[in-house]
Length: 175
Image (cartoon, rainbow, N blue to C red):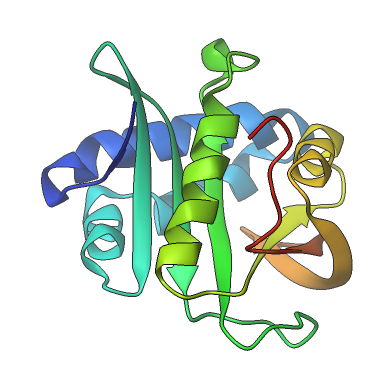
């Protein structure tokens, strides 16, 4: 089940966000840089602020009451290389490793598209680490294509993210 986050979800979301970030990136980055990033991005207070932000939509994926994934969509947020009058940024989308391959990410992405459409957005964009082929393949399957790049600072490490974008009216495969 996909639902909109409530402020009472902040602590649980913070724990899941940090866990999934570490699952995704710890093997390819220094512990110091991962720790610095997580400390600055995934506290319950920070997640509470993001949940409360009227320009952000935080979506949670639950299975039998367990939080297994999430997505965060920043409305009215653009990037120079993104062509669109009313863009939204897919700020984060993660699914716990134990739930990979079970359709959770597809459900989240379908809800992201629907949320952007309801908000009047015409395109969605995101940044993805150039060394994350699994994520890049998923985004391509969901209708995204590379439109540019940007610097992402992980702790003290400057990394290259690809910027991908898709039109909101793009149909997801299998939808």
